Length: 373
Ligand code: PMP
Image (cartoon, rainbow, N blue to C red; front, side, top):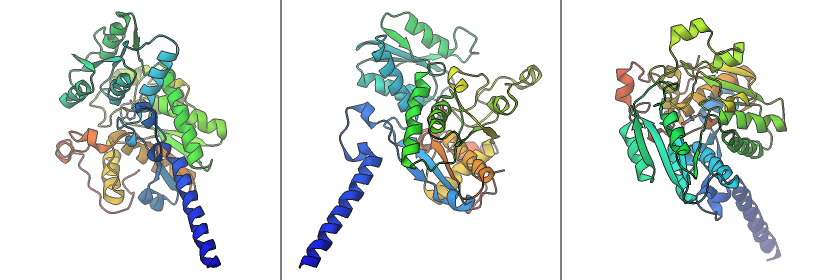
């Protein structure tokens, strides 16, 4: 009887220990949280089994698609609102504005409601109709504007900035230049460090505003300056040049190349031809270029082998993770960001007909990573 009692007590203590370990990893999964913002962040790190087996490294993806708004941008929206309230620039009933065709609009619309604020999103005309409908369903006021260059007063970013300037209690969120963006990702980096108990050798992701790579590199390098941080850059972007040669496009290149536009790459949210304030803070050791074909093959690969359904930037980030793993060598721990899920990409990146029509249909089968160059 005594042995049985000791055994059952040991089992109970062990299972409580496991339960607590799990709770610490994902507090909001097991506990209660304060409103919508309590659901944001503390996302799990998923070990991507196929990529890890094939590279001989441990490759982890930060599962940002599990945020309530479905993307990494929830963190940024929350931080921007928090800081705007803390500084007194925004109050309940006030207005937050942004010009975006991406996930930031969706995140801001949701978080604005949680703060009792209104949200205005300027959206280029050529953005998919579902995007405008979703934003409206989330209570945002949406203005469609014709696609023009950023220097034109009617560019969607300028429309959003003017709208904020026209009202008293209104703030332009300004995700590219607002450093609250990178501060949101200092926390992402802290989470990665804690989740791996400091056992991280490399981090890689693409950059749009640059907030993710700036924030994550900032906190990882604060813990250990030897963590190798790399950028993966899609076609049409000049950040690769910036990191490897210290310059964006040379004038001749810029003249020959057009500025990045939607036709340069199928990936969304990453790649840019100017250095934003957030990107300037990134501490980057090396850079890789990725192609659309590699990203498409990677998305199909992750679905086929791991059951992971990812968006275009997440797929490109995983291409980068493989390139970085190969360059660091076997046995290393490499982390990247799974920015959003494939659900938001069903009309383009995750649409076999669209890919076929653009000669990008995935061709590879099996577990080999030979499509990553
Ligand atoms: N992926 C998606 C889906 C995005 O919307 C963005 C933001 N433009 C990024 C990646 C890039 O992240 P960051 O802006 O922090 O560089």
